[in-house]
Length: 405
Image 1 (spheres, rainbow, N blue to C red):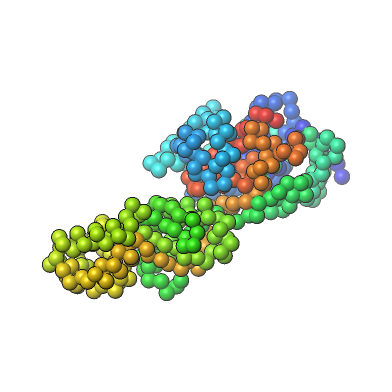
Image 2: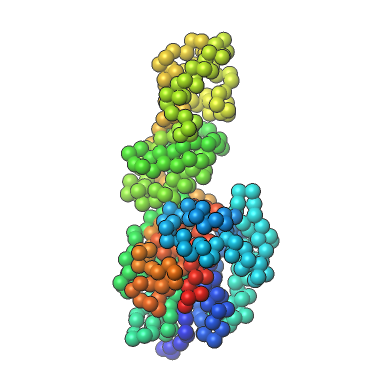
């Protein structure tokens, strides 16, 4: 079996792998660089990201604000984001022939509106820089032999001076990294939606969205934002954020827990809701409680609140009892639902877990155990909420290791 030698091998032909390899080759033109990809297809996640448009990054340019979108990696990425953040990402892609645009929600895409633009950019520069791209090379074994790394695939052997691993959430690769002495934080899905019991009538309100506060009862997990009711349960930014920050906790609960919704957000407590309802009652004494939704809720959602509080919608506000006022206030601020399982969110497949961040030098992205081993992207225990932040982690960590390798 012939052995191929390279100065640097990047394992993983995804976003972090290509970005690392291209930047390494640009900064070190005399070094031989190769990318090993286990499959036939390159940049698969880039292709489907953002509905096929590739959500390259997010228009959040202040590092101290940017890190807040990372449930895992917030502290570690503060320094790296000073060196390479969305401002640098925009400039990098512009210098490589790709202009980005910002949408109303802050997400950034190529002006072309297709992920193929990013793929073509990476493939063009990889070819231009003479980076060897070797597909169908699933790494089976990694060994340190004196000062070199030896990698074995199904049909090939490779030797390199420095090794870069950018294989994302790959359990097989994590096992090999573990065998090299690294600790792996147990993986768990992140960015998922919640399913309720089938008998829950709230699913009949599918499509309704509202600003809420959410809390997982019995834990400190809570968040605010828009909640979207679906035909299976709950989605929307608030749910996705809660799933990301609570990835490990909710996995431990086997995705079965009680979710408390404050439909008036945390700005309004139970007692304040009672006071507000009393004021509404005084102003609308002769009106039917069901004919005019309050707190700017849609009619269907208001009907649901009245049904949950067991209040006849044809009842006059003047006839609402103290007990009914209490029940309505509780429904608005302490509405609880049993979550029975999780569901995937669109095409997102983000995983919490990976290489323990304490074992990586974030000034260089070097392993603290092997100084010729480097990591980038989601193979590390770093993940973010949706919106281009996971790609930004790939660009930042890939750029830093290329700068220091």
